[in-house]
Image 1 (cartoon, helix red, strand yellow):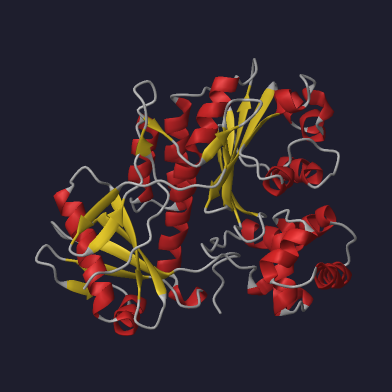
Image 2 (cartoon, rainbow, N blue to C red):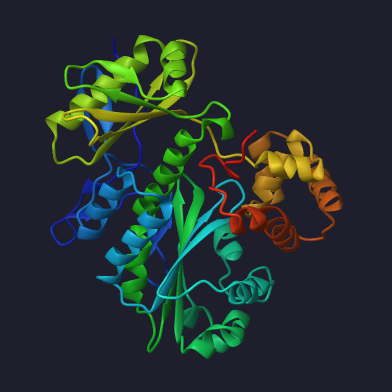
Length: 415
């Protein structure tokens, strides 16, 4: 049986000076960094009737980060390892590695390096995050679809124009800040904030960080996916874990995986064996990814990696391909309708009302009516006020309580 497997974004060899140059991104006009653009590229490996793809790259950072994508490290440990890798290329004193809800762009967790946690300092920073006059906030970068911002460049060298700098960073001897949004599949999965004491971040450093964004976003998403697989009670149609033995036997390691085998039938087992075969035939691969379409039209995504539990075995995470969605917690808290929930997510991601209407197949007039109804329910009058309210009332309590983020939007809260 031939299985149709759409490929994922990857890299292709390009030129001698840059042996692997990212395709589908365009240079940032100020830094020579990268911004998202249309177009996809990939590396394929055909085996057993399935096409299996691997994200590849030519830099030491990307190779090591790709290995982290398929490791079993918890999110915070993965962020610390990424931090250690990045410091070899870009010097800085401290950093904040954050995850963002891909459906809203709001913050869902933060791992600090080079500095201890301080709730008062964090509160002071976030007081400025939703200020319309504050330069290079996370919300602005996300709504503008940008990848990178260096504060000294954003303020024409006068970093004291930023409220967070005047109130917090200057007192610690920080002289510059670099922020990067980690995009994957047109959604913001996280951000990196780097802080330098002495000097400014250079255009080459900004470009290097921007180019690393997609592979770091992949590390974050796979870590969240493994968390969801470990807490199936917190996810509708939860991901499951299969194990493919060296002899090709496919067995479920989790109860949701057994359900997916029943739902998908032989096509899933075939795809899992193909991914495992690709891993065995290409031992340099850290992991592989593919998609299958079931007889009922359901699209499933498979993520394969070697496992230490059984020699020669490959672990495969299987999940239903689905877009990130605004979490039920916002629906429950404010009583918004399903359509208003769709509008809410697009608003927070910076879409214009014309774009919202086009994406949802409704008139712009109807989209504006939904926007007004959302503002009224939440008690705000602007997009920035909406983001600030939702972050403080609905997201921060989960963040401070250590509730894991969900790979599908919101948090892993038992249903």
